[in-house]
Picture 1 (cartoon, protein in one colour):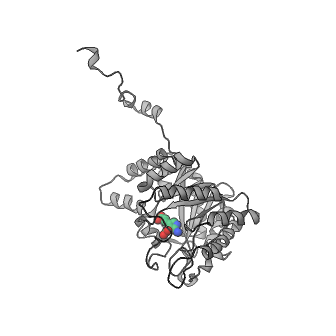
Picture 2: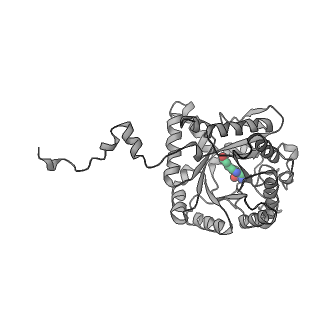
Picture 3: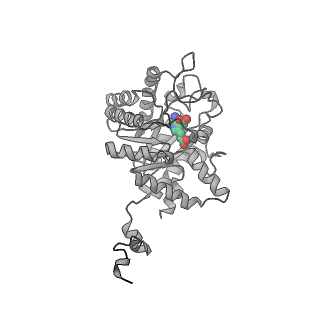
Amino acid sequence: MSLAAYPNLRLRRTRASGWSRTMHRETVLTPSDLIWPLFVTSGSGAEEPIASLPGVSRWSVDQIALRAKEAVRLGIPCVALFPHTPSDKRSDDGAEALSPDNLMCQAIRAIRDACGSDIGILTDVALDPYTSHGQDGLLDPAGYVVNDDTVAVLVDQALNQADAGADIIAPSDMMDGRVKAIRMALEMNSHPNVQIMSYAAKYASAFYGPFRDAVGSGGLLKGDKKSYQMDPANAAEALREVELDLAEGADSVMVKPGLAYLDIIWRVKQRFDVPVFAYQVSGEYALIEAGAAAGIADREALLMEKLIAFKRAGCSGVLTYHAPLAARLLGA
Ligand code: PBG
């Protein structure tokens, strides 16, 4: 056979052994890429499994502190907190969000006591865990979520969280102008170093179902969130959202959900080259678990393949309910 029959380049050559694959790997995932979302509930010593999120529980404040310590041990740099507000503390205006002693603030303080500055505490700003109607903001008589009055409440919610010790404020409400309003309030109230990670491109998604159960707003929500969350058909609009949030003072931006929006992550990273985070949301977690339970998916392999995809697309990190499992698989 003549030499010309052989290719000069054999891309399989570098794939032939494990050491070589390791050496040529373009993207790496480490526990420091993970942010662990945690659900807080009332009581003490309490763990409440969440049926639609098998393997995920709500934890009382004392237990949340233990989970945060676990995160530190696993090398996970940050936890994200969401409260399950008891129904008697929910109201039309979500006023519980402003209480300095709400579950969120208690959890922030407990984690700070337990872990000091060894962990970042990210807190969600939106009213849905506190409203009796499950929408993220205030409603007008027609049931429309009003923008500017909602922003005024979100600013107070963010300050309440920052006062309790939050490190990163993460507005997930998709109101216009909220990043600017929150940034100004943080500056004027002695929190210059509290970061803002904006849920900049957040889509009206069918992947959020289990989360709404987890915070207890699923059964309450009438209608949908399409008048503020984005249309899954839109990408150029996501870039405008990101551009605005950056101009308003966001330190980092989030794309949510994750896997179905890898193109958005990629475009945001290419265009703005700022820290981008993906939220692998509750429905994405639940589908991996359902696939594993049905025997049609290898949970660990599927998870790691998806997480590396976020990194490859340009993410600085990923919020995932699988964070502790992923950290362990990465050798933590
Ligand atoms: C609240 C909020 C939601 C999620 C994060 N913050 C739900 C929603 O917008 O309805 C979803 C997270 C998940 O599904 O894991 N605004």
